[in-house]
Image 1 (cartoon, rainbow, N blue to C red):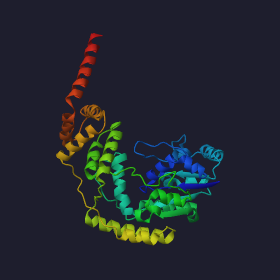
Image 2: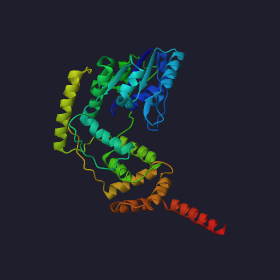
Image 3: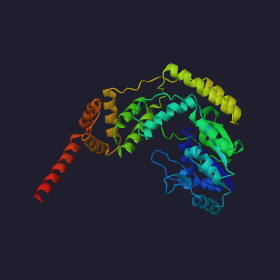
Image 4: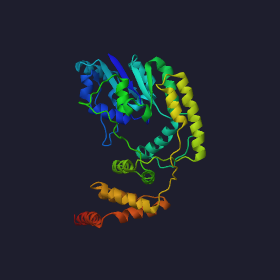
Length: 365
């Protein structure tokens, strides 16, 4: 049985690919390709098939679970499929471990210009991983993603890899979905499936990025999902390209990333490598923005967030009341006060009445 493993890497459209594959599992089975089901969040984002084959051992180390692998192939045979397809950007980091269990697998990865990855990765850090610090350019003068791929290639062998360019103009059918399906030899007719790339895991706007970065100074809990949903929506309306780098940083980083990409393409087969390098060499810096958010813009986003979804105001009220009990940064007190003032009076009265009622009942017992 053939095994194809899509390894991402990071920031190369994996979420869009996985969402399409998940929604079209039956069509893939009809094509003889078994793609295991996996969880996906409300924004269409997931870790793909990582946990379909991995687990934590007793020492809390990530390992490939042989029982899960056996069960995977059994399900594929029962579905009368000739190919097992797996996808997760986390596979890139664990190639040597995965290869031990899938020695004959074909690995597919997309190559994106490292300069774009750095800024997009920072946006993702603020979105998903609680990053509160301002952007700073890494000291390294190479692409971390390409370096990890190079290490994996040495462990696995270059003959088992297919690398394709991550660039809209170079995708088959001008869509990453169509491009990926072409790479795995799956045909899709206009009658049964759409191959249009859906906008998944949208980047925040410059104002949204700063809004979320401010909140990241504090534990968010359930507020994380609500803020992310709103800010992705707000970002999708603007679809604004921007850069956090100075002109000098941009020029230096572009030069270093081009050298590394050129070296990678010279050593390993990348589809349309010359065209990809030509595109990257002409890449120009989007409008630079400064990481600041005025009180006016903060208040505007705050009011839009409250209106965006039912119960946002209530959750925000409970969240800010909890923060007020903790030590806060001095320059944050003004914005916390703005949040409190933005909460509708009806919500404040309801919760305050409930609080004093519980106090009274406790005294009467």
